[in-house]
Image (cartoon, rainbow over all chains, first blue to last red):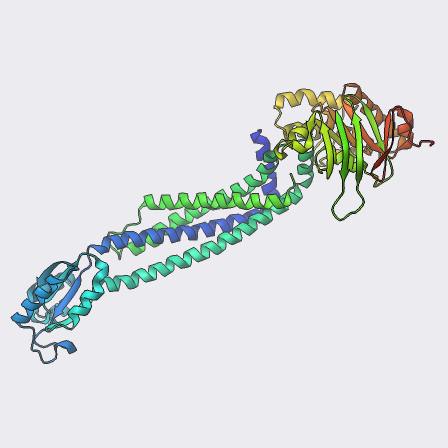
Length: 301
Length: 229
């Protein structure tokens, strides 16, 4: 096998089909970049889910003396008996891992620290305005609905909410973004496949004299086909490298910016590297397959 | 060297066979003319030897190998032992004489040193010394056919197939082409030449196999083109 012979043929082929080659490179680059973004969002979703899963808890707010919640109407605030009964009820639930009571003073402290800069707000709110609550930790965060349903109607409870519900809306948004990226990526990969097929067909037509003679003098099939496949591979590789650059740019300017709002869920370079490698290999494999399939049709050997 | 036993070939969508129960033997080192009108099956005969087509029945052996049993993946190796020359030369227009001949060796993976040694020898054998760096469009038809012959012969094939090699060339130049073919034949290469050219066949006095409607109607050693029946 004479490597420089193959490469000079490949070079001639790529140059002859320059516009098609550029089209292949751009399509592969964008398609693979979108695939990569999809994979990166995917990995973000799972790390974020892991991060939040042991932090989310069900908050059961108790009625204050004067409480706008309809469940508390006329109750005049939760009394000690109700509080104890609720604690017992929650502890008896099979889904519950632990339960902690948070009184108004503590809730006020937390609130103060969260809004430390906002003096106007802090001066308007007093400790008595903060509701008492039970912070319920669940064994499996996904079983919150049953817990909330049972506690919502209980006497002395103003409201029971799950932080997970809020997070899930956010995750749903991320997931639809991921699907959008993947669907567009699949369409582009399909387009890239057709483009590569066309490029190889043009190339086979341009080089029909050469391949005819190669067949005649007994060049082996691999020798005849390799330049065409290599054309596809090189176009795919350049496209893949470009998509790698796009992915790194998107990590720095997109993911790292968003991550500021979602503490502790850093998209690591390790993940980015893995994603780039996956898309690169995927892109090249697609190119090889597309080339081979077209060759079978347009190059008699 | 070439052995056809009761070979029949019918092309798809045609009811008349291109070759009809043809049996013929060509020995090593022979020079055979294949004559007959257009459509008599000459080209089919040559294509069958190259395994470009498969017979519908019968046995074909080339260089001791049964072609029916030869796997597709070994066909290139068969073709390396068979040189081919055509009426339309089939040279690469963007390569010069030397490169055209060297191409046949490059694509079967011969080392560069070997190519540098044998190509000039063959270019000289076909009478093109001093023209190695001409491009095909700078050569006459006869010279282009010599390049094609050099390319066919450069790998020292056991068999040389020539499909109307003088078809595009004037009679005076054809004599030179035939001299080269004869020179190649003298090195021990079996030559099978399909032709319409009566003058050439008559002047060479070699074995003549005549086909008509896919059947062999004459097989004569030291024959001529038109036979008085």
